[in-house]
Image 1 (cartoon, rainbow, N blue to C red):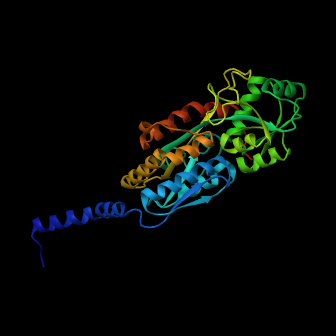
Image 2 (image 1 turned 60 degrees about the vertical axis):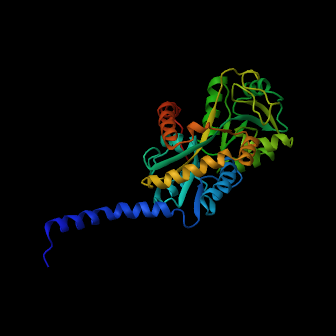
Length: 329
């Protein structure tokens, strides 16, 4: 049967529109099953502690469970790679940080592109860092720590959550500013590094509040300073880096949520709305504040803001990191 030209063109146009209609229908039905949130570090660390209350509250907005999957190793590159390879259907998302989505791009020959292989969902929190030491370390303040390190070059050990991780990079910055030398001891994440610091197996660490605050409050480790201009609301007794005697050594990072690239815009918008709702929840805000986290202002909780911040941070930090000539193991 020969179709009239007009009817043929109408049917052809309808067929061409079917994929778009199908994508929209899938997005409207999303989510219809549990979502996996990949945390690229071991359970118990700072990234994990941020992800869990966020996922718990997002469940209420999305109507589906969000299952945390911890995939540690290689400074987060293994877990982030898992997200990069996942189907772009909204059922796998990843929590990452400055280290995983900025620094790692300058440190590793990655199988993915930190800027172009992910769909930004939203920034979540930012944090400054604490300079902490084992309870028996022979110094009681930052000036004493620096003096001891200068008098005993290469004798102290500093834990890091991995080669090229934030505690490693901030430690190199600390060495450069103070003229000290010490050995770095890499771990698979902040939690196991903190365990050995508490046990006295390493001497000190530049650690995230999420990893360190509980141990500081319990008196298991010493806190010398926070790498910020103002004191931490969750621990106002800890002096700023300026007050402690090392003016200007500011160091902070941020955490955020991404999906695989090509995730439909409609799904990204739904995920973003769930993040925004979670960050507005009073109980979530309290839990994050207790971890020393600062939630991004509402107007910055957008995919566009995250993408712009990530690009700007990459332009700023890649030359610095590459100049340090860090060799990942």
